[in-house]
Length: 121
Image (tube, rainbow, N blue to C red; front, side):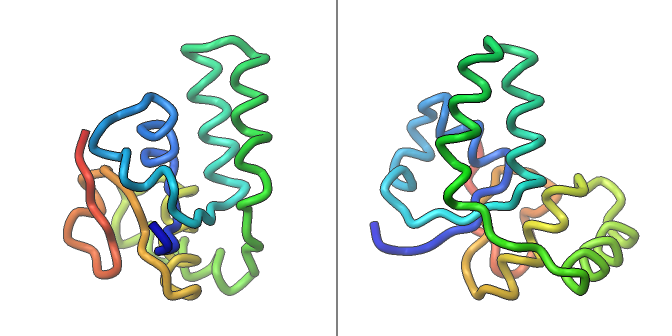
């Protein structure tokens, strides 16, 4: 698969878990943010060892893209309107739109957003 996607935390976790619904995205070009990796690392540490969690997080580190001031402000405007969004995912969605890539998620709060590739568990 040659398409590029912004993987939100939900997508990262489902790929790591080997969810067959996310299998087709394993070979995709990935971007994500440091905020999504922080959330990923935290969530993994609740279920897995520190060593595994840190190893997986480092594996995705090369896919981190910069987040600028304008991205942050726009994302917090979005979160103000859609309070259920996580801060990392609101930032990721804004960055994905700016980079003109699909935002990959299974988070119900994004189901009807433009530019979202929605894949449920």
